Picture 1 (cartoon, rainbow, N blue to C red):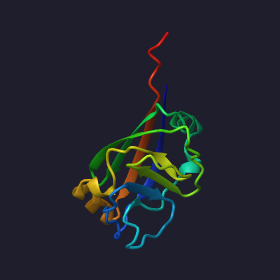
Picture 2: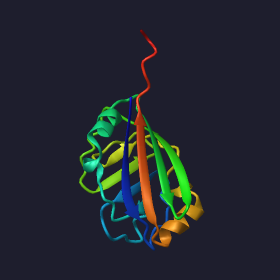
Picture 3: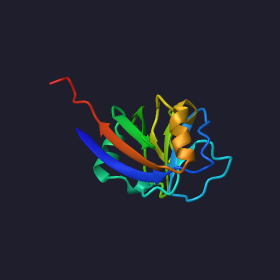
Picture 4: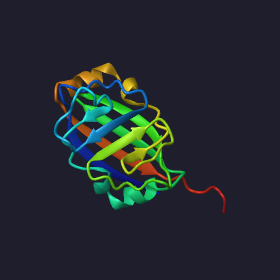
Length: 146
C-alpha cells in the first residue's frame, strides 16, 4: 500500500541547516537564527493537513517514508520510518527526526538525513528564498506470510 502528498514552502535567508538530529518545514512565515533545523517556511500544510491516507499508512511501525526535497534545481531524498505512536495533528509543523522520539509534529523517525547532512548547495538555494517542494511517499510493505 502506498500514499503520497506534496507540501509547498519556501526558503528564507536565515536557513542554516545545521541541526544535528532533525529538520523541519513550518507554516510560520518568519525564521530566527535559532531555528537551525528549519529548512522551509510559509508551508501550505502542517502535519494535521496531510492527506488522510498518507497519515493512516504513516501510523504503522513498518511504514517507510521517502521524502524528496526540491529547491533551486537541487533534489535531496530522505528515507525515514513511520510509527504507530504518530498523532500527526500539529497545525503548523512537520519534523523529520534521526531518533525514535515522537511528538505531534513528527512525520518521520530514524531519518537517514537531518538538517546538518543536507547538501550545502541545497541549503544555499533555500537561503536565496527558492520555492521548496516536499514530496512525501509512504509505503507499508506487504506481509510476506500467507
